[in-house]
Amino acid sequence: MDVVLSVTDLTVVFSGFRALKGITLEVGDREVVTIIGPNGAGKSTLLDAIVGKSPVASGHVYYQGHDITNKSPHEVARLGIGRKFQNPNVYNELTVFENILLALKGTHGILASITSKLTRAKKDKIAWVLERIGLLDKAFVKVASLSHGQKQWVEIGMVIAQDPSIVLLDEPTAGMTSDETHLTGEIIKTISQDHSVVVIEHDMDFVKQIAQRIIVLHQGEKLAEGSVTEVQNNSKVVEVYLGREKIDVAAA
Ligand code: ADP
Ligand code: MG
Image 1 (cartoon, rainbow, N blue to C red):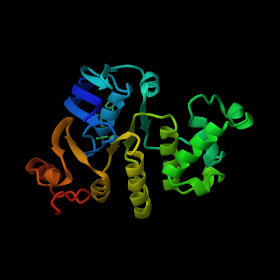
Image 2: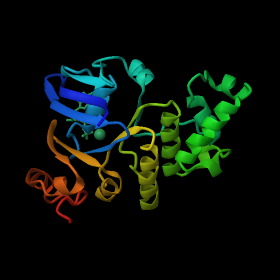
Image 3: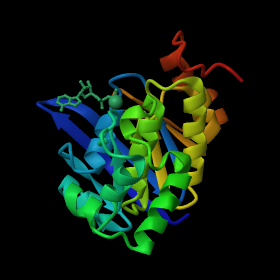
């Protein structure tokens, strides 16, 4: 496996509270890794630490073999790690096409990007992104008129428009209908043809739809790692989730 991202013995401390306690993991080229775990397990903190948003107290983050521990979020993004946050951060008054255009490398500022003549390469790139997020037919629609789920896809599009090697998604299906959730799974599978993907997720049906490998976090520690079946049959995981309805780890 070609390793794109690796995290070794990572610890994050907030005012004495150890939110992550020695996490080690690897993400391969074009692999989809899903992170699950109860609220407060440290899932978002793990992504924050990878992108330089939460300070790493000890341990390391390596991207394509380079140590990027505690680099600035801007530098990490520039190197090729794309991160989508929970709330869509899109321009409602612009079209889907314009939103993707703004995210492309080498595009500077709203006015310049809308008034300057578009190169064929940029148009092709935007069409390529829109196809991947399933919004080609909505290209010239204002983002304001899209559904919540479609807005999330626009933001995923804005992340992949920057050509990251790896895309980090924090609960991308939050607030989505079940149809939108399923479509998001298909979008993630499509994206993984060109990018590695790390997804934090609660919905176990969704996890089953996309997951190649699952990592379970609990109280800042890695509780288990493996395939859907391996994780579901792991006695430590069953114990942590016992009685929780959202994650039916006991189901076959
Ligand atoms: P998850 O995403 O798994 O629900 P988080 O990573 O958001 O969990 O949080 C893990 C723990 O770290 C929680 O107890 C949370 O309160 C704490 N935490 C997260 N971010 C901060 C912060 N910036 N300052 C202090 N504590 C934090
Ligand atoms: Mg979180």
